[in-house]
Image (cartoon, rainbow, N blue to C red; front, side):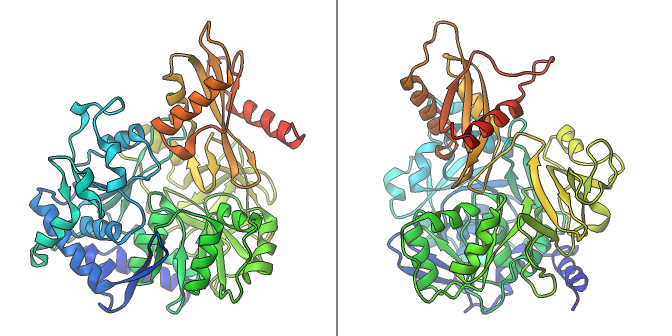
Length: 551
């Protein structure tokens, strides 16, 4: 079967007029087949079969219906990688509801913003996350209009009087009462929020037909085969982990590994060795951390495929992967609105020699181009321009616009409907290989996470001592980029190390721990356009030059 034929087959499966999502993702697979291997915090292993997932998700779907959840309602999860998470997500889809993933590193304001934006009716959270949903300084009681389901062994210890407990719901529910909801390929089944690079985070409605694109990446980008031990190490609160660690493997009937322990090189090596991982997908930060760690590389690695996503991969990491892992690391490119679309594909039908610094070629089902900066015309090979998706040749393209944001949607598409503007800059060479050079917005990519400056700046200027703030990404050997902030203080406020530390702590507690600025620079003024718009690129370039000079 040719790649074009396979793309057509995937679209016929996942873009049909009448489908049942639970059947596509669970029920059609052999009940005895393992869907996930959960690695507990003590590194013990639990295999979960599709039969178990079917029973648990039917019970949760029945419980959701009993709570008044109807098809199209939004139900959020604030959970780590676990059996409970997969149970909740599959149950949400089985009930015909829309899953809203929330990253567990988010603080209360960031969570509340997304819950309000999704108009979520119910939130399923781990017991460790319950405190973030309590009314307080960052969440007015009048704004809490969702019900909470608490999961985990300590759920009863933290549950509030009106809360529901996941284990009790599952025990009491009758799986025979689970609904059978029929949808079509355009039905929304996930709503994932962008990073808020140019304003408040935007809701991306993900339709069922996107599953065709997710499976295509598993096959052509990652070359996940039936006998592979596949591990997508990304967090399911973000696109790469959700698309290719949860939804994609379920749609393809491929097992994934869910590690509940926190990341460390030692833990990563142990999981790779003990489970005999053969196909690893992770952010460049994971590979860089393994390379820089003094933890010895275990013997007997079985890796045949290693793939990177989330940020540009350092060219020297490709050779390191081949030398140490036994598989060169292939870089791939995508966005929340696309999934992965330009790849150094591993599948035999698309594999090409990897060029240093290249993010690859358009995947089957996708077409791309680089347009000139001053016109919607193709740039010459090697000429810097704007990376775009050619919609005329991209049958796997599923994004049609943001929720309730027509202006932002219009910015993404050309007037004639031919091009989708990624907002990233780069070039394509004469062979058709694409190279990422920069972003034409202010997004920061740190350790695979796309971070928008707007939310961080909003938290900083909400402090009475800060008059203005600008947040940028600066080069970092381990994470690719890290967040730094430039602040203009209010009159009479003195710049001290204590103030900088307090502002860092404020971002950690008001937004997310990983978003705090590693350095806070106090400046007299920020560079601006005549209309008053902050020119972050001036700050970014100046800091990059200082770092390059060793300052």
